[in-house]
Image 1 (cartoon, rainbow, N blue to C red):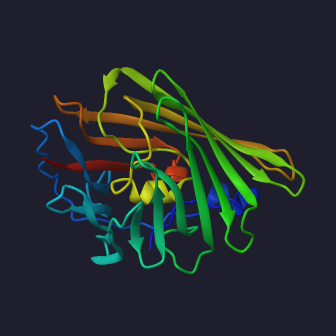
Image 2 (cartoon, rainbow, N blue to C red):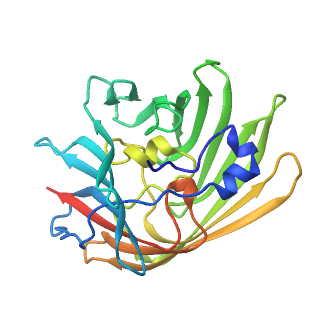
Length: 288
């Protein structure tokens, strides 16, 4: 099973946050045929492949129904040829139901306002949490707060997102230390302004509910340019020691409609958003 390197509580632990190992796996391996001749296309598959061997290792697969909305999300381990998770998505009034135990609440405009589910959405043994989302005047996700359901109403962790020129440029992680909130991590994002992208991945750090289920929900407007680099600075709240990791997004292949077909990640893992160095990410779309 593949799990994002993420936890409000374990952010305090430098060892977990920086050196948690990645579990490899994934989808079949051939470069998908991408029909983006139409302008209205949504992400259907994110396939993770070894950039050197070309072997597919993992895939996030969304199935769309006749109403052009996601009806199932599958996390598929290609190396072992098994399905890790299968989420039967449905849309009752004012919510997006992910499975029997996890759901999003939605506002009148369809944007998600809360997530109720597991800290690691693919691991039912993890803690139950409530995440709440706020948006700025430009319809961009500006904050994600988190409460543990064992202590309802007590925010233990929050992410604050900043935008420049319609791109996400900073994410700041703050943890409640018993007295107040303490900044423990800052992620800065840099972009190639010459490359416009459409309906690309949400890369909002430390928001696994959005990362896993982004094809089924509305979480505000995404960045408009191709990301070039993400730099994570983590400060150990106990020692004050700072560690920096840099992830480079390279070799973008973008079609004439501005849909990203593939890119590579080099440098350090960007595991706070579920991406890993040494991998090529292939994107396939559902168009209607």
